[in-house]
Length: 285
Image (cartoon, rainbow, N blue to C red; front, top):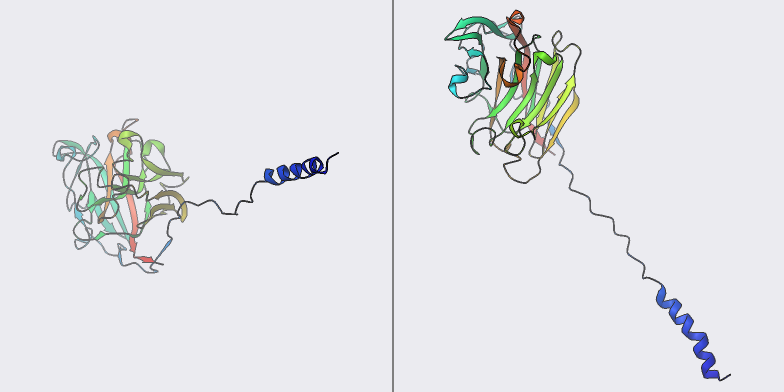
């Protein structure tokens, strides 16, 4: 056999074998989505109402939304919100009591109160706490929540809403923490909410809390997280929460949600009790 032919036989398979090996790939980890920045909060409140006085709510901290569904806000509710009326909003024994009453008033069959801190205490970010006990009874709809002070992005829901505590009497002891925005709201069935059943929400006080930061809004019941809403950074339609908001405390009667199973007139008067509300400043780490 010719030596040249032998060399072809020997070296060509070795060359093919060498070429068949793939180059070693570098060990590069897959990119991870950005994690939300974590925040802490001051140890003592920068603003609070401990309700350690008697009479009407402190006028330096609270005003009133007065009127009814006819004012252009509300959800087809049945109450008329009054102003500076002890029957509907009174502080005594260290507690604020907001009461909805079955009575004829200004053409309506129920009265209640809707306290607001607008123009007296407005906030951008922070930890917001309320220790509260909600009323039982079909047709009651108590809430502690926040609305934008300046409505910079337009009317509801474009400028946002933060619900720190909601409860409807036809679903007793089930509490909700929610947000509403242009992209996420109940009118288009996209709203974001956290829900928790508490066996004694109507007979004992519980702590409801929202941590509001530039990166997330998180909700807690008795320091247990039940809600987490991250800032998607897709614009104000999803995140209008970079403007000032203020407190609201109220009991509605009936309405689109509270009245879904009717209203039990025997449930009134119905009272929500507030032990305190507190705000802690956000600290950037």
